[in-house]
Image (cartoon, rainbow, N blue to C red; front, side, top):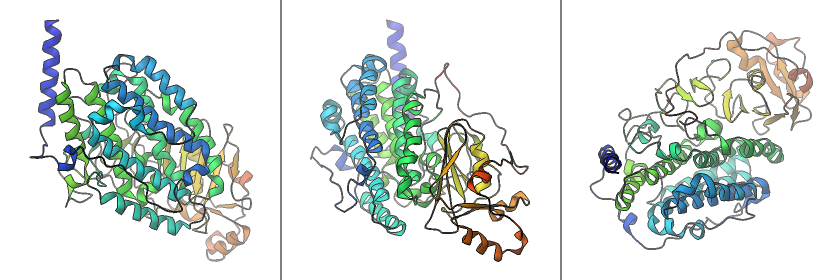
Length: 497
């Protein structure tokens, strides 16, 4: 018993010393105020557009219930049952999601009263989550109008003192405290649920962003199945899902929102770890959670700029090339970063051929498969990259019409369906560095021939039907550059990050 007490005390002291590197002289006054600040939606015709896709809406509503149940168990001294009874109760909700949002205060009253400032931050950021989805799912607005409305939402969100920073934060720093990793090590099953929620909360943005509404349901058949069968129970994920990892197009267009979501999810991880850390008194946990909030508040980083900062510090706002909507990850630099499930990547290059990506967030294509989404240069790269994975996949590809995106969905056998019945493809097979010119999707034969009339070098090329195009596979291109580095994540024990 004496030995145990000495170890516990050492952990508490080490935690305090580690987190003292960046401490404010005083915390913002609102964090200590007991005044109730209930948050309401911005009124508009977009409110609750999420209900237009009921399976997705219900899954999203259930994520809040799961968080609240686990936090209440931690706050009331029932952490010993997290991996058993609490996990089973949460899992039951996830398998039978509610028809409408559930007030988290009602599910976790002890936690909400004890950490009211944290609940304020969580609720405000979750409101941004849901209202952004509502805008993207609005049935009557153009893509341009949706972009404008999302920009308005960000301004409204940022105006509050409890808004989180839209700057990229160094994730290695924020996940590098003495208490970091405690929760995922002690409660791997519940941590997998949390990270599964965050996967769902970030993967949906590319599912809706500038994508035809009539594809939402078919896309969610793939996404929802992956969520329920794999992501919720994935105890081997090396790091929490990042928005740019699952929705790169949205993250490139709205980097501040993407960063704020990642900062929110890292705050969740910090709180989880603090509550799970042995040896911390209630007062110490309260203080550490307040500091965790302060580190990621927008007001803490006033006057700071994306792309600048001291490496691996609180004020490190650097990001890898081509991805301003994603903070630096463990072991990464401005050129490359490690993506769980994919290995080392250069985010400014095509994930399949290593050629430079367009700076236009709506050019090229993306591939969603096996839990990740990667940006690629052309239709060929998308098809061949999808073929390298098992299971279903989604390709979202630009066409000649900026307002008409092609969405292709494959079954487990690689058979593709299209949202554009008249789609045809150009695949001239020239030198791969120019693949974005000779591999394209067109909404019609007329558009295909119009493109060829302007490019005589492709004269004689025949349009490919979807079936003809899907039957081809060029394999791995000669231009692909594999970055051979070991994973920066080491597992403390089998099956745990």
